Length: 473
Image 1 (cartoon, rainbow, N blue to C red):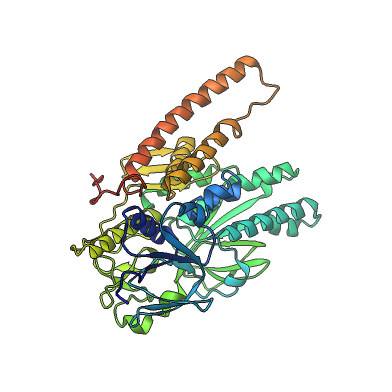
Image 2 (cartoon, rainbow, N blue to C red):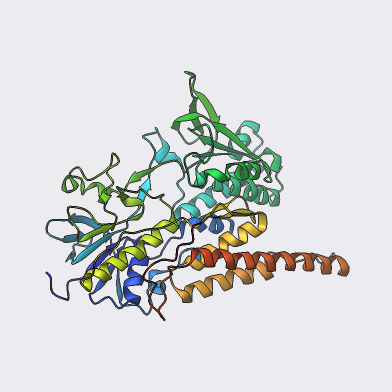
């Protein structure tokens, strides 16, 4: 099992897994690398909102692993890992295949959690995958069509009321996006957009509470209130049950159960431990938290099984927990690759030391906020451009980076800013000059954002830097 043909296996093709694989490949890791994921395509979750709105296309948000791993020496296996035997260093796949591993990297993330809320899993819409986005779009368009045709006012209100549960970043971004998107869709159908209601529901008494984006609360609140349809907040309430036509909730310190009539509940609150990680429970002993997530050392290894690395949403660094965000996950992928390379060369392993480079949030169509190190905050269209440009450049390979970003910029220039034929020549010139100046300024800020965020991107032309450059102040 210790010969040179025994592979290092990476389970999960998210940021942790994909970046670990790419870094190892680009640094000429001397052992076989196998990346296993049940899906054919990578899911760039922060850009799912742009996919829902049509601001970005499939190939930008869901690049295939075949494309992303092209030219690497990584073997991609599309399958589901069903069993991990830590003592035997073996995994079994749903197809019946099994592999012995030299080292194992776990980057399977988490799954949607519902806190045991009655009917939530069956009736609420999650928003984590391409299929989720497609299902939600189809449902929303169907509701708007029915609302235009019904004569029943009560039914129309139910069809036009959208509940978003959870006021963390995902819930805030979803509510803000829909508050611009649905009026656009409904207006084209001839509907009265003022009848649309977007309701953001949260158990806590504040939005973004306890999140790395908490310092953006006032900016987010202002954005929610200034959308095409202002977002209504119901804070400090517990969702009791969800069915096809209603959401039942209870305010804190009140016994009465209230009801929101809606055919659309979108669930962004909470996560649950991946079942594959849960299955390791007995093997982990006491080395896990109350949610069943394994504790890992500063080098991102399981203390009892040092040949296993784990990071991202499916593990917790016991000495220094990190926020479960994409920018931390992709840095941890690079750190795991560094340590796997060190093991292959008989060198000492180094503690992982990811750092937050700022936060990015979508706050409506063509509206966002880019906050770099809590020093520079850019909002509006420029903030949205920085967010999208930075995220696209973080996608894992230079070829895909260039293609995705070029397509997006082309779309920004030629498709989203067409001028009405009735506009006068002078007005058209003024409009173009104003837009072009703002666009150039925003692109300059995109470049700044990318430079600040992008110091650990694997490159096939050169090895990643051994030690990350500290950008904190």
